[in-house]
Image (cartoon, rainbow over all chains, first blue to last red; front, top):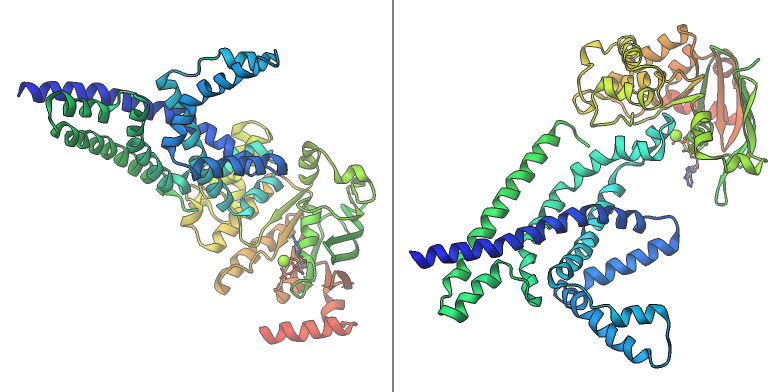
Amino acid sequence: METFLNVTLDLLNGFGTTVKLFGLTLLFALPLGLIFSFCSMSKFKPVSALMKVFIWIIRGTPLMLQLIVVFYGPGLAGAWAEDLLAVTDNALIQWIATWNGLDRFPAVLVAFVINYACYFSEIYRGGIESIPKGQYEAGQVLGMTKTQIFFKIVLLQVIKRIIPPMSNEIITLVKDTSLARIIAVYEIIWSAQVYIKSAGLIWPLFYTAAFYLIFNGVLTVLFRKIEKKLDYFKG
Amino acid sequence: MSVLEVSNIKKSFGKVEVLRDISFSLEKGEVLSIIGSSGSGKTTLLRCLNFLEYADEGTITVNGKLLYDGSDKKSKRMKEAEIRTKRLHFGIVFQNFNLFPQYNVLKNIMLAPTLLKHGDEKAIEENAKKLIERVGLADKINNYPCELSGGQQQRVAIARALALNPDILCFDEPTSALDPELTGEVLKVIRSLKTGDSTMIVVTHEMGFAREVSDKIIFMADGVIEEFGTPEEIFGNPKSEKMKAFLSRSLENI
Ligand SMILES: Nc1ncnc2c1ncn2[C@@H]1O[C@H](COP(=O)(O)OP(=O)(O)OP(=O)(O)O)[C@@H](O)[C@H]1O
Ligand SMILES: [Mg+2]
């Protein structure tokens, strides 16, 4: 009984990090994704092309790899920069050589935010492009500005359309947070694994499933509620 | 002075010449119907008037004020704010209504006047309610578009366009997306606007309606005005072969 309590407390501790990573990722990735989607829909070709290549790279490679690049990349670049300092005293090179990179948690957060912003941006883009041209034109002929058309006419319709794919993606994010342990961020899976090594206990690892399930259950209910709230209109 | 003067409008999409030298004028309170077969450029003409497209050449003058000149490079690169004020001289009712689904009837009509700050909230609401009554939807004021029939949605769209007091109200086949039994109620509303002194341009395939409501009729074919005249002239004494063929075809359809 005592071990169960201890395990629960330990797992809760790790789960705190999980939730923190989840919440902060959403907080930054949701708006960043919108910016990315505008870039990828930009009429200015270099911007949209660059954005599309970037999204292709991020979506085309494992998140685990991206975590490693963000965490170890600056150190590696620093070592190269130091070598380069022998032949140049460029200020940027100097700065790279002395920069120590990010701490573990910020590094994970940066990788997650960029990764999820790319996924979100594609969902936003799909949603925005699915709104009939007639909605924009109706706004235009009524003398509205582009900003008014987006925020007063298009946005809510987009939100309604993207809630199902977004809820999928967000539930995936909850589970993806477990990747943070790759660079030794103490999230819930890591805190369970400690018991394998220290006490030969495997069940704490299974026990983590309960935490994920409850959290995702709450999210599912929440999304269902939002969907219901927007049920009053079609389109 | 004419409310609207359109001269020598030309418009191409790539190599396709859709409008080839369109000119006409319209007096205050007049109703102009534009008829013609599919692809003759009727929609494109209305879109040029509402600045949803820009004519390559030609001028658009409203109440004696030159709004657009295709030969003037500046006209084509008008600032967004300038286009916005200019297009307010026109209103347009689309074939498929394009109501805003997330707003109820009242809000659909109030949205633009509110955003454009056409008076205080109270006055805007009062005017909107009057317009809703005028199109016969007083009992639907709080309903959402998805709860309305096509005919009712189109009447809301008409009220929404009227709320900004355009000088000229354009209709692009306002009844084409409707079940036949619903066209009557929409046509009735448009007819009632005529007595209300609105200047209107109606693109329509409803020959009976065009004949009855119009002061002038334009028959378009392949991007030119093939025939122009009063309903009596157009229907009673069509001159061109194209017009005759078109009329016999549309009579067959009825
Ligand atoms: N944005 C566009 N790009 C290319 N071609 C276009 C565009 N809009 C219209 N067209 C072409 O212009 C021609 C005229 O189209 P328009 O819609 O003005 O005809 P219409 O008289 O309104 O026909 P309908 O009675 O079917 O509505 C058609 O051949 C159409 O394919
Ligand atoms: Mg058309």
